[in-house]
Image: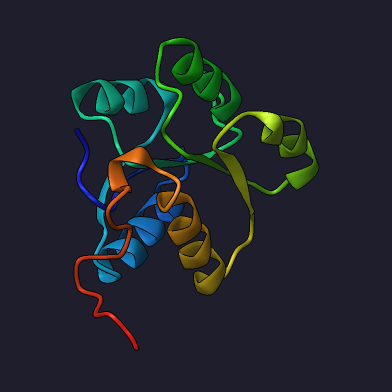
Length: 138
């Protein structure tokens, strides 16, 4: 099973993947990356993440196609966040359980809030969704 904060970032834009991975790792999350839908499926098969953060529009296998594949193959409890420059295109998908979106461009605070909110919904993190380097605040 996945570890607390295990996030899979999927995007065909390498610069975006590298930026998101670095930001999340700096916050203490364990992060893996994939640059297309096929790589994402292999990563999910190897180890189910606690959350998937993926681009909605990728060549060959779009984020929508990947989401449908994940959901129809028995992986219904992983929160999925679609990153998109077209939030209206993501709205019809929001009626699916555990699906959210993050509008591009996004700032660091929006990214971190979205990740924290969605990780808290992951069964893999039912005990804790805080990054490993965070300290409790009173």
